[in-house]
Image (cartoon, rainbow, N blue to C red):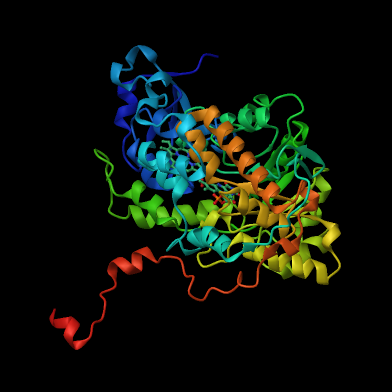
Length: 494
Ligand code: HEM
Ligand SMILES: Cc1cc2nc3c(=O)[nH]c(=O)nc-3n(C[C@H](O)[C@H](O)[C@H](O)COP(=O)(O)O)c2cc1C
């Protein structure tokens, strides 16, 4: 039976909170009953009430999300294309294409920070805010970088380093470098093609990509974009509805995914205020509001999080995961030695020591600092060989990567650097970033007297100050802006 055709003018009439229709990819949905369930809050949908929401929806949701999560009865029919006014037609992809003229040439980019600085200047504000933000005062975000300054290196000399081999094995997969692309949601906020750009670059450079549950591209699209023999892992947010989770896991496995990374540091998403500000400063025009939107949003988000990300996830669930998949299971977001020991005892294949790029618990310690503690606990418990230990957070330089390997990590994840490289220069940008990191790591390995990864050892890194935070506090930006400094009797009169 042909779908019911609805005129554009008809859709426009349903533009209130109680009666909220939207067009997405030519289909008309009644999103009123879904408003309070929407994980992104009531506001973004209300802004689109009665309109074509495709452009607002597309960059931040996987293509198949509606099929997977929206109750079928909320689909009302298709918009009658003959009634669609000119200006609501979607902007062509070319118009959204990267504006290369504003940017330095790619060959002038020398390090990860260069990509970040270009991204900051050229990305759309909402994309930049989502990618760059951290939780609360962003102390952990900054500490992820600062902590590397508290480790110093002890090179060996007179070692034959004519050839240096940066390749290694992670979860049984050969990788050209001891690093991987970590899972980061919403790739289309930075690049119109989204995460498939990362897939392709990972393929040409032979490194692993961890695909996020909340990618803008569907898992199938990312799988289709991979080269023959290329390895992908899947990052999982565990849904309260375990049937949905089971379906996702089985689907990933059937598509040849080689590792399941369960995120364990996000029973609730952190408050990322830079990001929140870009979303909520402007009011939705022409839409009936009741003045309670922010309250509703919080309620809606809390409710939605409890269904999209289950705060009830706990150690007892690990056995169930093992029963539904043969993929190696890795827990992403371990932050203390005791939990690393529990993970080893639970029989998982690995852990990622991570604070989620400083986006979850502020004043949590840096990944590199936790790594040192975790390796010590595992060693004391005699469990070092039972699982592989990965780490992420703030890795930007070859020296950072080297330090993690010296402390015992099997590999290192990077999040934002890949997003910035992708958002600014697309696939060639991501490839250049990987090449630069390879050059840096190769140089460090040569200067350290370590021709291969297995030659890197703990005695090469001085870590005695790593866990000391005295005098090293990251800048507390908000506090500094609002704090009125005290002054002496003379100072106050100046
Ligand atoms: C008018 C249509 C829609 C608009 C404008 C919209 C907009 C948004 C926005 C702005 C976010 C926040 C992203 C962030 O955290 O930065 C979001 C998140 C989300 N939306 Fe929508 N949305 C729409 C419809 C839908 C529908 C129909 C579904 C599912 C059936 C959905 C599922 C989600 C999910 C799962 C998230 C969470 C992503 C995350 O936490 O990172 N949305 N949406
Ligand atoms: C924009 C953004 C989105 C992210 N989304 C997810 C996610 O959906 N799931 C997850 O487990 N980790 C997510 N992370 C955390 C990363 O996987 C990784 O732990 C972190 O980015 C590493 O820190 P770095 O950005 O300093 O390299 C995200 C990080 C960023 C920056």
